[in-house]
Structures are given as structure tokens and as C-alpha cells.
Length: 72
Image 1: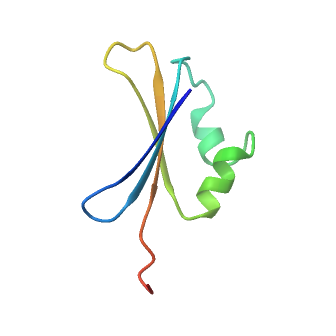
Image 2 (image 1 turned 90 degrees about the vertical axis):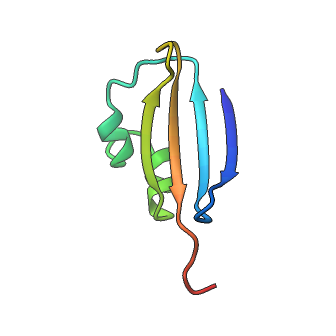
């Protein structure tokens, strides 16, 4: 696994987790927190969670986008 953190121009924190397994059969359930707990906790932080395959389709990346706190 590879984890990358970046701050986008719009101050969104991007957290990318690259996984060497391209399959994600229960992606919707995992992202919605119905299967497993990790992504559920990420969603509780108000993150937008998506996933995509690499161009060569050998790996997948799950990405969490955390919006900046408007009150800060």
C-alpha cells in the first residue's frame, strides 16, 4: 500500500491510499459504512470518498477529500 497526502489549491486535504489489488467488489457498501469500519470513520469526518483504477488497471486508489473547516 502507498499513502499520499496533499493539499489541493482549494485547500481540500486529499488522502490517497493505493492498493495493489484492483478489485473492490463491495465498494459501495464499504464507502457507505455498511461493510467494514475504516471508510465509515473517514465518512464521519465529512470526507467525500471515491475510488478509481490506475491507467494500467493493476492497482486501485481510494481517495478521501476533506474540506477545510469554514469556521477557521
